[in-house]
Image 1 (cartoon, one colour):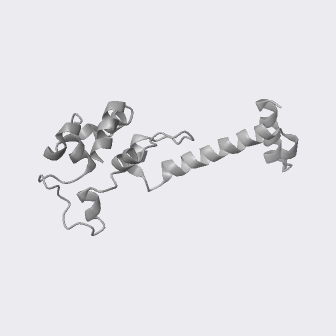
Image 2 (tube, rainbow, N blue to C red):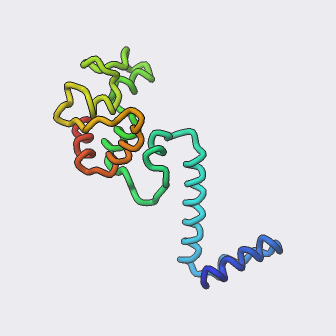
Image 3 (cartoon, rainbow, N blue to C red):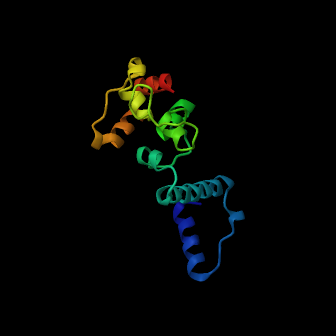
Length: 150
């Protein structure tokens, strides 16, 4: 059954209240329709959600393929993990400052901390932080440096 026929059956069902029988469709077609529907719902939820905005700003499209699959990358881009700025949010640290004097965010360690110089990535302009993060996500050398920091 082609897409045109599936569309026509769906249109008839919505207009006339007579749903077509999924049992008459081949299993791969049903799986494809369900996957497409699930991805659309997931994308809508991701776009409208309140959580994960730091990651959303870097990767706005959902995918079944892993984009960031290594723990250290997830920790860095979500800005969660063993960093003073994050730990301070949950009274697990008295200060959000790094021992070098800067605010201990993942970006601080990746771009300016004197204790992580060998892993530094070229610092971004403040108004281009999101674009910089998108480039870092897609740059294997930068991601390797991030893994050294985390």
